[in-house]
Length: 289
Image (cartoon, rainbow, N blue to C red; front, side, top):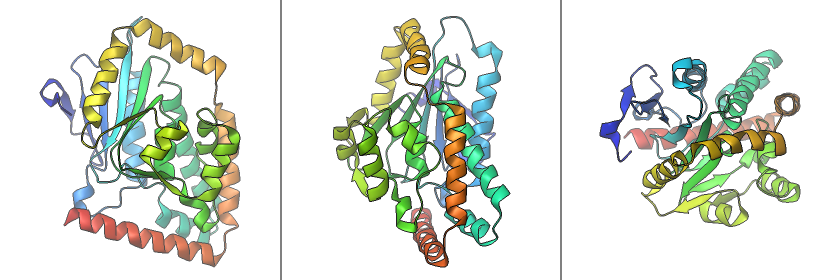
């Protein structure tokens, strides 16, 4: 980010780069810090463990919580993509093995994460997704769980799961319905199209659209503005939870439908997953080269 000299960097998480302000008022999480190794920029278990470990640590760190203190968490990426979604290689393996429990464990961990972000990590955090590269499937769900989505122009965003007979089951429907009508949410999900960030902004999914390369500066501006009125934004966190709640049980119920749908897929759908994994591998190897 632009003010990197003012931040403290953590080396404790091998799959992501974490930079925190000295006063712990803001934390920037850059996913896919290991992208140079040719690793797919998706929600691999290692990345999920690192992300939720760090987010849980700052949620439970009482020293960072003060009455009237507003904190920020920014989710970004070190890869050319923001995030390409769930680990399809793992999904296809677990589906072929008919391993419902491990598939459900993965899905529940995803739901724990997005719910944590959506509720402001206990209420005193505003979450911001900085989308500078493609956000697909679970990557878009992650962005949708945040209070604010900032996207640079020319980025692809979409939920392509229908291409292999699935739907996005870790919060997309619930979070989309807080931004657009249920009818439009279903269209986005069932069409499986990849929309431009410009289109997503016009639909109301993206909050702020900025030119290429200006995303980090835009996020810094948002943080400065919100820090000038911390009590108002802390109150809005509470109001949002009352007026537009996305319940934990709702998310868990939907993700169980996702698991059952996945286990019913046939070989044709699984081969489509395999082809997408191969395309992601080529993307990752190209980025590493």
